Image (cartoon, rainbow, N blue to C red; front, side, top):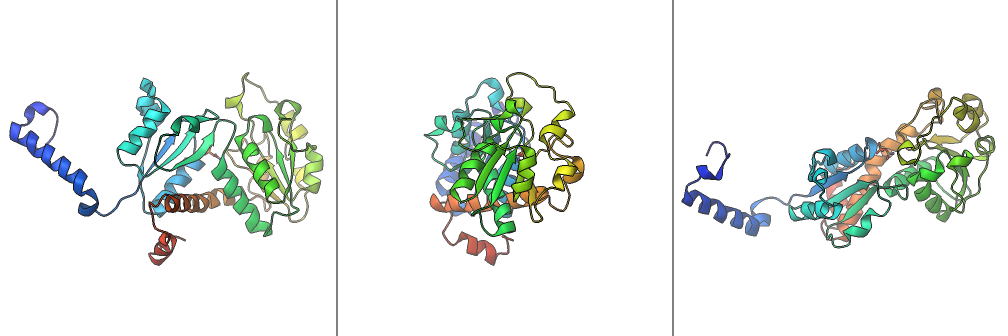
Length: 309
Ligand code: CP
């Protein structure tokens, strides 16, 4: 057949021939073809950095990437997250990377039996962002102990703030929050300081954008916001000599940070993005090793093949 448009074009023998071939392929799959790894990135919220850096990381590791666009998927017909994930498992995905607006989306995926990576859960967790930021800080200072890290901005609606506060404290850093009163979240055990205090004492100042999409009521932000709560050029001059600026991005230039500071000498914002690729490679390797999907010596094999930087 040149094209396959309708079953009506097939003779009976052609149908049985296809049935036999498909059954054979399923049985002989591993022997017939080289082992392939399929990674599926299921993003139900917009993303540039996380989705694309996972894609780059997966391609560097030699995975086949199954792209997924929620708006063009059967989720639009009401398919649940579980049924979507179960479908990818059924068709041979070895790994799922998921971002979803619900805080606890992973609770419904208990019966999925392939590894899942959280690429963002509501306003609760963004663990891969946390680890890539830890890498960025560690590469700068060689330790977390005693570092003063201030997280500044819309703490209340930020999954980054939630993920980072706990991890940084566990690693020995002193964590501070700085926020406009309406963006504070007093349920997290972190002291609040003003932005002027933050720039003076901090080794790391991490800005967060206002997470409009998670607000119950739309908020109009005036130019006063930068002056009152953001990182202005005059505040940057108050920072310690070796202090650095981080931002998980996307950035709202001129709102939480002066646009001229985004790529200033202290900024490690694009370094964070670069580190995201390598941290996500590391996370996927560890997870797939744990599940026995790739061998313990996979990293060495990659290095041998010059596939890991
Ligand atoms: N930092 C981050 O999660 O960016 P994206 O929303 O673009 O993935």
